[in-house]
Length: 533
Image 1 (cartoon, rainbow, N blue to C red):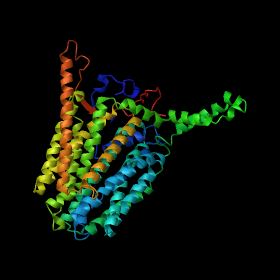
Image 2 (cartoon, rainbow, N blue to C red):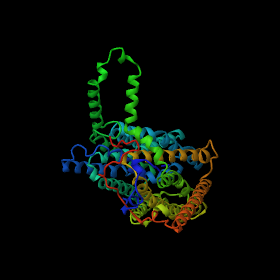
Image 3 (cartoon, helix red, strand yellow):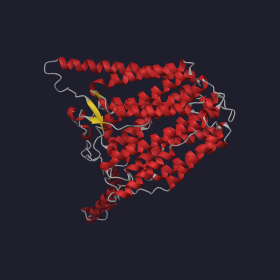
Image 4 (cartoon, rainbow, N blue to C red):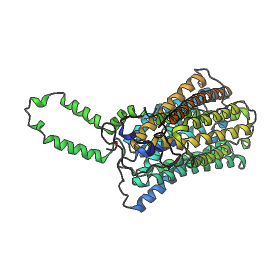
């Protein structure tokens, strides 16, 4: 979704696009991270960067918050809890009535959360996320009805939509030359939190032999502490769209200049035209950063490489999250554990998180001519994922199901940093925020459509095995499309190379991914203005 013939922000030579670079690792919400970095980088160095100790402690505090807020030992065991005698919901209720609410809630809240993160300057959105987490675990502790569990999933959707606020906040503390470093810190802290949470939950269930109620109480304690940390955070004074000091100064200067212009010396009757104010408002909107970026999208969508990886982000991420939302129900059907200690969800989630981190790190060392082989690489990996989904949906061996899931997540995480780099390397940070935001929103809409048709009680209401068959067909269709596109791209490349004098301009060096310079100047938009206010 995301070639501009004339766009300044994408007007680069092939050699510049293929320079040797290496991307940083990414977690499941890689799009949130890149969006978040862009959301916080418009104003240059923040206040207080002249005091290294001050921002060091602030970054440490926020990383500690990211780690602690990710520790929810009961999270991998929510589905076993709902299907256990403690809650006594049927598998059909959990699959077709409770779980789909998460998708609908996430879609409804995503855009408001994206805008409020900037408008309210991060902290209130983190507090909202913390409150939602507390409500989730209170409902899991005390709730018994179907409506209460649907409300729990609604608040889960809110927490997913608010994830970008944490990553955005941490970038408001440092100068641009430190963005990549603190991005690594924030990702590492969250990954370590998720890994620790999964291991702790599994140890409690397998060795401690505690009840689901006790595990949920422990989780409530951790998220309550996370909410307290969010309340203690300082309030940043700047953001991208709505709180820019520089923009305010420019507006004040413009107002001052206008007061001294010829307009003030005109006859009174000439100043009473009602069209003057609307024209001024329209001009201010047209010159705003957000309006410029929206106009720029018309050129961005024409770039083949950006379009390919954005479409991958939309379609493959949709399938990925559908699998994540319903795989625990599949595990319960394949292996209905009669005792708490026989549930291994926490250990599997810990192993998949660890493999995901390793695969994301490995992606930084891949040297491939992406302008030629992108479609083929995506097609091969999507084909492997389709095979793994077919295996998960047909096997009766829970350990085969576990291993297939771990590998499935690992392959997705291998492509996330590559997609992030391929999209971000040709755009300003502001455009990255918009493009990743739109990609995420379109993926959420597609997720909602699939859920309504195949999963929701008001649709076909497939059971979990049939759902995974649908997921397999979905990935299989994507595989066929990617292979067709790969054949076309490779055929055109070698046809041009075999022509007399051809291929000279199409020579592409193998590309090693790496972060783009954080303090690089913003490239101009096609209308001649800078994306940075």
